[in-house]
Image 1: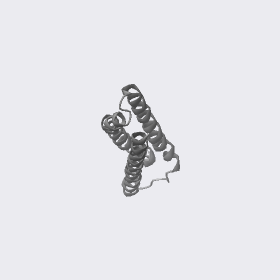
Image 2: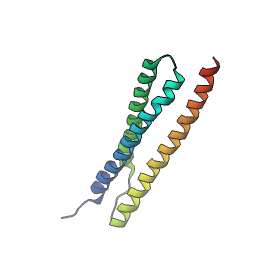
Image 3: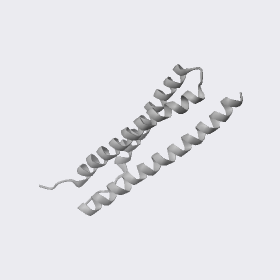
Image 4: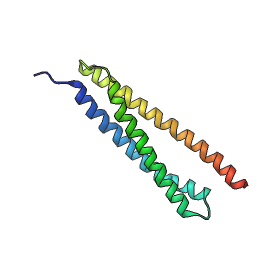
Length: 118
Protein backbone atom coordinates (compact mmCIF):
# COMPACT_ATOMS: atom_id res chain seq x y z
CA UNK A 1 0.00 0.00 0.00
CA UNK A 2 1.46 3.34 -1.10
CA UNK A 3 0.76 6.16 1.36
CA UNK A 4 0.44 9.64 -0.16
CA UNK A 5 2.57 12.06 1.87
CA UNK A 6 0.82 15.04 0.24
CA UNK A 7 -2.44 14.22 2.01
CA UNK A 8 -0.63 14.03 5.35
CA UNK A 9 1.18 17.31 4.61
CA UNK A 10 -2.08 19.06 3.71
CA UNK A 11 -3.67 18.00 6.97
CA UNK A 12 -0.71 19.02 9.12
CA UNK A 13 -0.27 22.32 7.28
CA UNK A 14 -3.94 23.23 7.41
CA UNK A 15 -4.15 22.38 11.12
CA UNK A 16 -1.04 24.41 12.04
CA UNK A 17 -1.95 27.43 9.95
CA UNK A 18 -5.61 27.38 11.02
CA UNK A 19 -4.56 27.47 14.68
CA UNK A 20 -2.12 30.30 14.01
CA UNK A 21 -4.62 32.28 11.94
CA UNK A 22 -7.50 31.86 14.39
CA UNK A 23 -5.36 32.64 17.47
CA UNK A 24 -3.78 35.75 15.93
CA UNK A 25 -7.09 36.86 14.44
CA UNK A 26 -8.74 36.69 17.85
CA UNK A 27 -5.85 38.66 19.40
CA UNK A 28 -6.23 41.32 16.68
CA UNK A 29 -9.98 41.40 17.28
CA UNK A 30 -9.71 41.85 21.06
CA UNK A 31 -6.78 44.28 21.07
CA UNK A 32 -7.76 46.11 17.88
CA UNK A 33 -11.05 47.13 19.45
CA UNK A 34 -9.13 49.66 21.56
CA UNK A 35 -7.70 51.33 18.46
CA UNK A 36 -11.07 51.45 16.73
CA UNK A 37 -12.80 52.87 19.79
CA UNK A 38 -10.08 55.51 19.89
CA UNK A 39 -10.80 56.36 16.24
CA UNK A 40 -14.58 56.41 16.64
CA UNK A 41 -14.76 58.13 20.02
CA UNK A 42 -18.49 58.76 20.18
CA UNK A 43 -19.62 55.84 18.01
CA UNK A 44 -18.97 52.52 19.74
CA UNK A 45 -21.44 50.69 17.51
CA UNK A 46 -19.49 51.62 14.37
CA UNK A 47 -16.20 50.62 16.01
CA UNK A 48 -17.59 47.23 17.08
CA UNK A 49 -19.19 46.56 13.69
CA UNK A 50 -16.01 47.50 11.84
CA UNK A 51 -13.96 45.31 14.17
CA UNK A 52 -16.21 42.31 13.43
CA UNK A 53 -16.03 42.97 9.70
CA UNK A 54 -12.23 43.18 9.86
CA UNK A 55 -12.09 39.85 11.72
CA UNK A 56 -14.34 38.15 9.18
CA UNK A 57 -12.29 39.53 6.27
CA UNK A 58 -9.08 38.47 7.98
CA UNK A 59 -10.32 34.90 8.44
CA UNK A 60 -11.70 34.64 4.91
CA UNK A 61 -8.55 36.04 3.31
CA UNK A 62 -6.09 33.90 5.23
CA UNK A 63 -7.95 30.61 5.44
CA UNK A 64 -8.90 31.01 1.78
CA UNK A 65 -5.26 31.58 0.84
CA UNK A 66 -4.21 28.49 2.78
CA UNK A 67 -6.84 26.37 1.04
CA UNK A 68 -6.03 27.67 -2.46
CA UNK A 69 -2.27 27.35 -1.95
CA UNK A 70 -2.60 23.60 -1.41
CA UNK A 71 -3.23 23.18 -5.13
CA UNK A 72 0.24 24.54 -5.93
CA UNK A 73 2.26 22.13 -3.79
CA UNK A 74 4.74 19.81 -5.47
CA UNK A 75 4.53 16.06 -5.06
CA UNK A 76 6.15 14.96 -1.79
CA UNK A 77 8.24 11.78 -1.92
CA UNK A 78 10.11 11.76 1.41
CA UNK A 79 9.55 12.71 5.03
CA UNK A 80 12.28 15.34 4.75
CA UNK A 81 10.45 17.03 1.88
CA UNK A 82 7.25 16.92 3.96
CA UNK A 83 8.87 18.71 6.90
CA UNK A 84 10.67 21.24 4.68
CA UNK A 85 7.54 22.12 2.73
CA UNK A 86 5.35 22.47 5.82
CA UNK A 87 7.99 24.65 7.49
CA UNK A 88 8.42 26.80 4.38
CA UNK A 89 4.70 27.33 3.80
CA UNK A 90 3.94 27.92 7.49
CA UNK A 91 6.80 30.43 7.67
CA UNK A 92 5.41 32.19 4.61
CA UNK A 93 2.01 32.47 6.30
CA UNK A 94 3.63 33.85 9.48
CA UNK A 95 5.58 36.45 7.48
CA UNK A 96 2.45 37.40 5.56
CA UNK A 97 0.51 37.87 8.79
CA UNK A 98 3.27 40.03 10.23
CA UNK A 99 3.31 42.16 7.07
CA UNK A 100 -0.48 42.52 7.18
CA UNK A 101 -0.24 43.59 10.83
CA UNK A 102 2.29 46.34 10.11
CA UNK A 103 0.33 47.59 7.11
CA UNK A 104 -2.87 47.68 9.18
CA UNK A 105 -1.12 49.56 11.98
CA UNK A 106 0.12 52.13 9.45
CA UNK A 107 -3.46 52.56 8.18
CA UNK A 108 -4.71 52.99 11.73
CA UNK A 109 -2.14 55.70 12.36
CA UNK A 110 -3.10 57.49 9.15
CA UNK A 111 -6.79 57.19 9.97
CA UNK A 112 -6.14 58.48 13.47
CA UNK A 113 -4.44 61.58 12.09
CA UNK A 114 -7.24 62.13 9.59
CA UNK A 115 -10.10 61.70 12.05
CA UNK A 116 -8.41 63.71 14.81
CA UNK A 117 -7.84 66.73 12.56
CA UNK A 118 -11.31 66.73 10.96
